[in-house]
Length: 112
Length: 113
Image 1 (cartoon, rainbow over the protein chains, first blue to last red):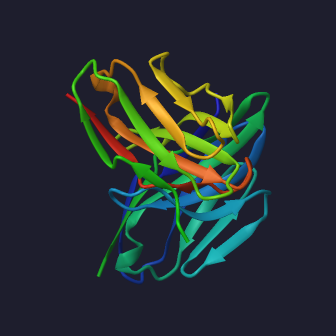
Image 2: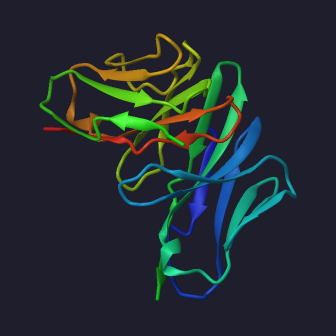
């Protein structure tokens, strides 16, 4: 069964304290790995797509990396406005299946 | 530009009632997805449309759930005879193609009492 596991479930940082979130996956037919940010009461907001091992993408204080078994979302010098739930999802396709499979997310809190 | 919109944003239904949830995707997006999100969980896939064709409905939890996209644009998710376990946020997402990034709407929070 395809699985996506995110860790930690929750992370509390001080402003400026860099850290990383992990997303490990066991899927067959991976066609892409996605990172989303979700604020309370809102839909997920697209951050990055990674398609192959070794790929990296950056946006402001965020950097996403991908290996054959996991992805990391590195947060450099976070600010309170980075507080949100970060979701990882894998896209698999094959036969009649076209879907994103999400992890449960990491709730990030950045204190001023 | 306009993103994905969903209506209503909140819906309270009595057990046994039918509900219809609407999704307006980003103009020109071929692919449309529905997800269900329980509190504290990630979204779970329900169904996928490419234009008006429903290509994957493997995530629909029961035959009480039905989705359509008759003209390849607006989509409706219908839940018949709602049950308490149907209480969740229902998210719609659209994408320019099946493999690309999906853009989500704000969701409809359904509460079944």
